[in-house]
View 1 (cartoon, one colour):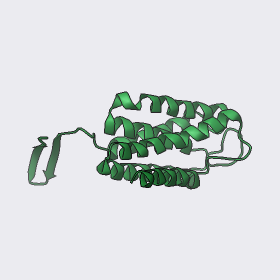
View 2 (cartoon, rainbow, N blue to C red; view 1 turned 180 degrees about the horizontal axis):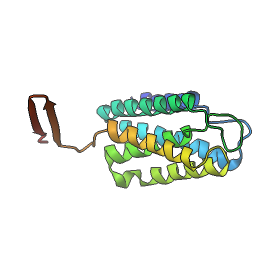
View 3 (tube, rainbow, N blue to C red; view 1 turned 45 degrees about the horizontal axis):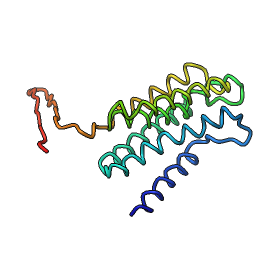
View 4 (tube, rainbow, N blue to C red; view 1 turned 90 degrees about the horizontal axis):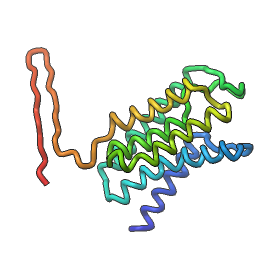
Length: 183
């Protein structure tokens, strides 16, 4: 069972690299560090679901990650914004930053702020590297961070959440229901 978890983590890490063209052969050391951290944060977030034996969290990670990546790609494909370095017109939003912040905010929402602080610091470093190597401007980086955070905050539930509140709003009926899980 232990090797299966490592294989899954390796598979996710590989798919992150393939799904998003993050690593290029001529990267500077700073850019390479940002590339690695951009992949490592969501990989660690995903791995945390295995560490905690959290199958529900894993499903939430899949939805959050896929939604974030799809939204980022749709925006990149539809908004032709030239990169500050002039290399192409796929600047908006930053994919590196969106996947880094998706992973950090998944850990935050699912397991708590105290566990996510190092991931947020790493995601901030990724954002810094994208600005520093002239791949993105502040708008691209902020949009990437917002997408990553929104996808996890919206599609992830707290691991310890016991109280569930739902509304029922129909044309002729308004209601609120509450459900509390006793452990």
